[in-house]
Image (tube, rainbow, N blue to C red; front, side, top):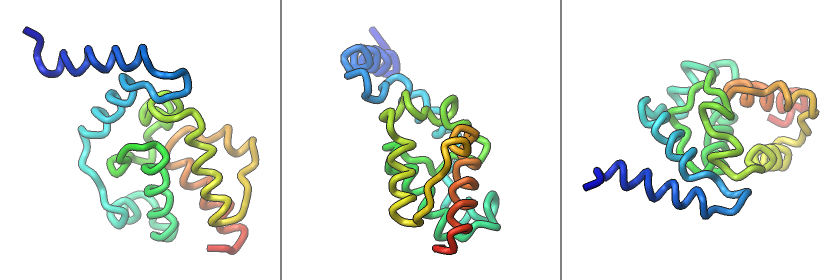
Length: 142
């Protein structure tokens, strides 16, 4: 008899084979959720104090909320050094346009567009936040 975890993996493999090409991989999503579940969730206030004291709390809150919304899973345990692709599953555990969704929300709320060359240098969760903040504060909208 298969153990519950083995059955779970079996069904994830089936779902992964049946998914549309641009849909998130259930297997990869499960890996990311397992990775994140090994850490305590941090409130916006805790995260702000520990990792981004020079960025306004409202901006940190917006960034973490929008990231969780568009990744479609809870990123409250994500840390600044987490790599967007390798650790947090961007593009394979999420829809392939997750970054564009976050950037569109950012542009609608704060105004500036992030240059393509700046976007390509972003590899971690913390770099993503810092880059967005850098351009937001330059426009004096925040």
